[in-house]
Image 1: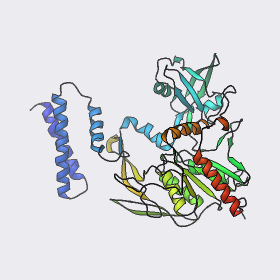
Image 2 (image 1 turned 45 degrees about the vertical axis):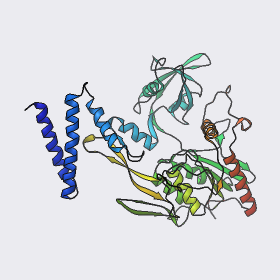
Image 3 (image 1 turned 120 degrees about the vertical axis):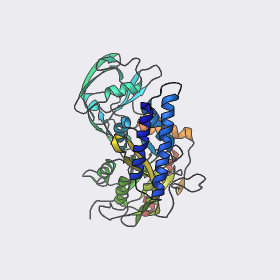
Image 4 (image 1 turned 90 degrees about the horizontal axis):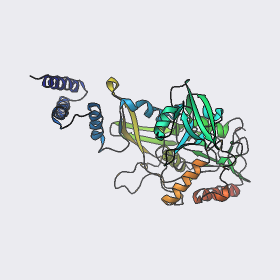
Length: 439
């Protein structure tokens, strides 16, 4: 008996034993053992006989990906090598200096913007700086991903960036730290890089944009609205909450934010084939005072964005303006695999709005997501221009020679214009007085 044949038999026996240790009936365990045996046999045949040598670890990853390929696109396998970066993206945090980069076709790499309060911002890196060296290594010939990898690194370690600014080379040495990306933004930057929040002074209408729902979003939003110098204390009479282009995030944060605005009633429910129905209800703790509110959504508002906008709509707490949302109403669980085998992000349930509407868009469905009360459609080209414009408003440390975009040159945003007109009309008709945080 060859050593390879012996190894195959041992692997098959061990995997069969593992299958019998799994929960389930005897027949189910028999099926597991037979299934595992076939997989092992295919692996052996390929390994021994394929015309060229194969990468064993790559084959393992692709075999798992193939197993998941006919499921929904949100069920994915994360191999161990990508686990750390995947988890940091889920959390919205990473270790680095806090800059957004843009790569040009000729290979040049530029700073789009530093992250407010991050090491790059504090060191003096400006939007528009060209990065020409990282720790003395020229960036010419490197991809933008490689430049990013060289800048990233463990917290409390140093990195030196050499930038070209108006023909002058400048060196900036920074200590990496955990970067917390802001997820709640204002309407546009003031000349001093602070946020402008009020889009109407009489009546006082504020604007806040949530880019995603992560662990910091609730605190950011609550501070902006109800903090010591928050918008409520500044006499805010109405709020436009922009959830356009927001692909979602954490379910628990969406529920906390809904509790901020809704005092009682059902917020959202979840149910799956192997998951009992779970109903989230408003707890009435810390609910902000009532004020007119409009939520902006479009066809790229998904998941947690749909939960928040749909629940606010169903609970008659806010009007929704824009386009029908994406329809990503499924619940994923992140399951660590044994023996450091990575993790599985698996769809286990669906979201249902208080009205009972299924958020998720199933194949052939005619109803999904959130339907705005006031529909304002935009084509894809107009949406792409608008998304770029919204992102550009977050840029800080912009050189004086590259002035902030002015409203006169800004692209049309009929969804925002409609929301602003509608909420002003609501406030005027209701003769709304400024909301307060206390009696």
